[in-house]
Amino acid sequence: MRRYLAAALAALWPKVIIDAVYWRKIDHWERKQGELVKLKVGLAWLLMALFLATGLVACGDATSPAGANGPAPVSSSPNGASNSSVKINVLATTTQLGDFARNIGGDRVQVTQILRPGDDPHDYDPTADDSKNAAAAKLIVKNGVGVDDWLDKIITNSGTRAPLVDASEGIKLRAGHGDEEKLGDPHIWHSTGNAKIMVANIARGLIQVDPAGQDYYQAQLTAYQKQLDDLKTEITRIFAPVPVEKRKLVTNHDAFGYFTDEFQITVIGSVVPSFSDAAQPTPQEINQLIKNIKDNNVKVIFTENTINPKIAEQVAGAAGVKIYSNLYGDSLGAPGSDGDTYFKMELTNAKNMAAGFQQQ
Ligand SMILES: [Zn+2]
Image (tube, rainbow, N blue to C red; front, side):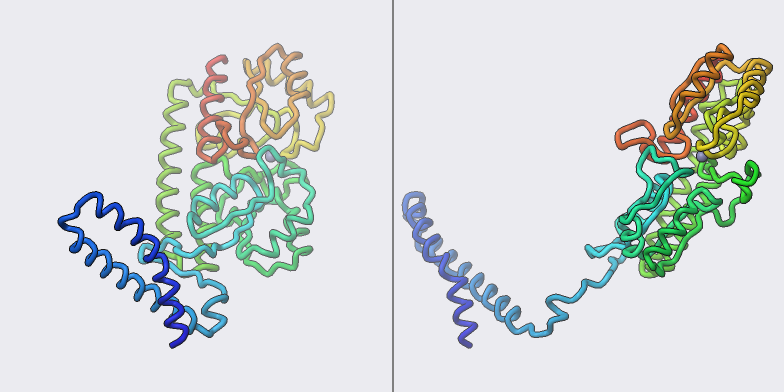
């Protein structure tokens, strides 16, 4: 009871001050109706004081520590969107996967991605922060096909038991180059058809660790896959004015096999003779590439955002062709660039390729 009185008094004291100020104005405004207004204001303050006092007493009576300080449960509203600040921590290896996970996970997830825009996935040294992020993750997403095998070390160092999504699961792989690419060509994301499978794999992983969000993730997936279909239609439209015989591609490294399969483009060669930019071409390989460029009437070499263009520029000089930079090969572009999302990356690549092919 003492607590009730103290709370009521605490709630009422501002009324004394505000009434004093308010009454001076009422006198000034409407002397005739002053008494009526005074009655209404008084009743309103009494009700508010009772409401506040009840609330304070109720708070004071809550004795369960879990009620006040325990972790907030992950809960969902009827449409499935999270109404809690607790989100599912997802760790993704590459920039493309980070974008996919954010789009499928939406409001329910917090995505950390290991690679930054412009990082080369073929050549990455894990850090201590990566292990911390893996330890905090509820779900880990990798590209697979060998390109992000450095994740194994991160998983071991962190001791994480979080489920792992291999986004390449179910994708028909192209052949890889030599021993380094025994599993196949890892650049699977450059096909919109593959991307649909990758996001479906991510959605399945999210539903596994957050079953309450099943309907939400399914809706996000359906919408994103529809956008991927639209993307394919748009890229087809971009290439439509370019005759198939002009669609001949020479790039810095061989990252676009899945893209070229999807849009009737022929790969003539690449400057770096493997999927990894760590490899250097031999003089014989450079000479062979220059010959292929000339024999096929190629006029443009495309460079990529993650790879030093120096050797490509030397080849272009020797072959007498132009350099077109930059395609987004193995990484999204920096925020604000024309390749800072998966959709923008693929659209920009298509536009740049189409413009370059028209020179041929
Ligand atoms: Zn690559």
